[in-house]
Length: 164
Ligand code: PNS
Image 1 (cartoon, rainbow, N blue to C red):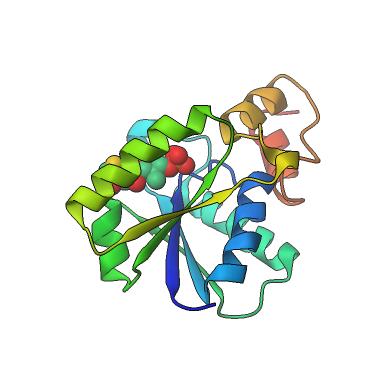
Image 2: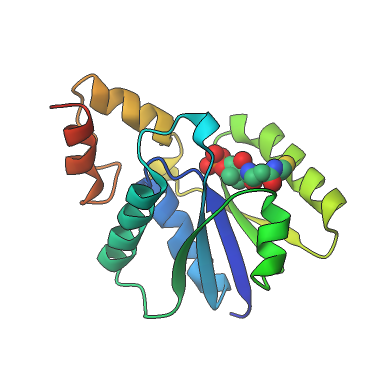
């Protein structure tokens, strides 16, 4: 267990799929910086501040040891952000086959840009293999129950967004 990894994403919102990756990542890395992409062109449901708050609440719920998870936001190129934070590893979760091509493209592009930074993948927990923020938002918007798919503090925030 050594080194710092950056775990980047939209996290709009964080799901239990993400927290499972974070949990596994902490077995491999001393510290993980969860980095929320600040990209308004993606038209997120939650602001960056809200997304960071939900990640902090989820980390607390997980009982993460102090100092082992940091929550930050970034814009611009991920590799530049990782380098600025002294991280040599980008951590990503892999779910169903649909993720593979996109992740391979990103990993190769990031390696082309910055060969000294490696992307490390962790296989998603099979319980959350099909959990994606986009689907969780759709189900919550249509009145479905997402309680088992998101950290405890996320569900009320989703319901509030959709006036449920
Ligand atoms: O949770 P997501 O939306 O799948 O995360 C995608 C993310 C944030 C990892 C990706 O969009 C990203 O790294 N964006 C920053 C811009 C960048 O570096 N682009 C080139 C990477 S190929």
